Image 1: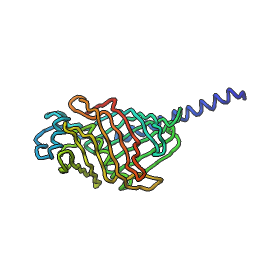
Image 2: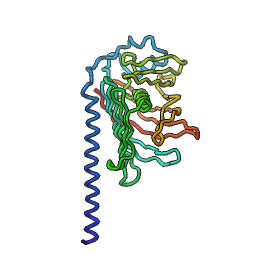
Image 3: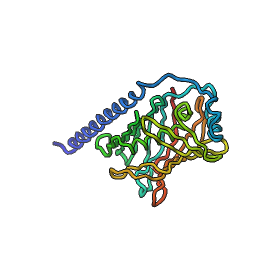
Image 4: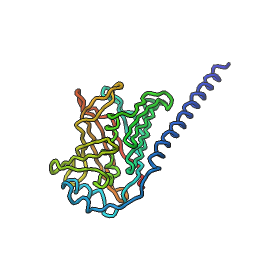
Length: 277
């Protein structure tokens, strides 16, 4: 067979395999998202009466980001564009595009990310949390499995911490009526605690003088390392607050681990699109 023709046929075969794998990946994402959507409860309204006894910085935050009478968010779709760093030793940021789906009743999320490791070689990532159970899968070009983390107590706790931190993008989820318990720390910080289906998570929220959440911190969050989980301090840094419809949210952020050898910032992005229901 002509070598050029053979090369062309192999290339077409590889492209076909990748296309089919991507179709299966998207079908898997749709199944996870549909599982969130099928139990979503009806919408209610924000009532500022429920925030009157909260710590002062938390009250400032809600009065900044919400309006009395605004619709309670039941589902959110957040589109992110940014970068991902795969290792503390890797200085380069891989381009990342992601879409994240959230449900507040029941509480859960599905993160569908595409990370360009190198030209024509992408990592597909699905991180999810639903009914107190977390899972994560990573496939190279949607074909070769790299990670398939099954539900565990430590993975689920970390996923709920993530949900609680990312609720700043759909801020009605942080209200007491949504199950979040706020405790005063000082005039610029407060602790938020949430329990879902037996999984409990707490985070420290830090506010500036305007009421914006600028940092979110966990003294311990479990990080997976070669099949085992180790607890390290974890932090999210947020900025560039903008009004999106009835809500005000941070539209850029960075997430990092505080490791023994130093800070490892591994995710950074801006919010390019939101859709609330």
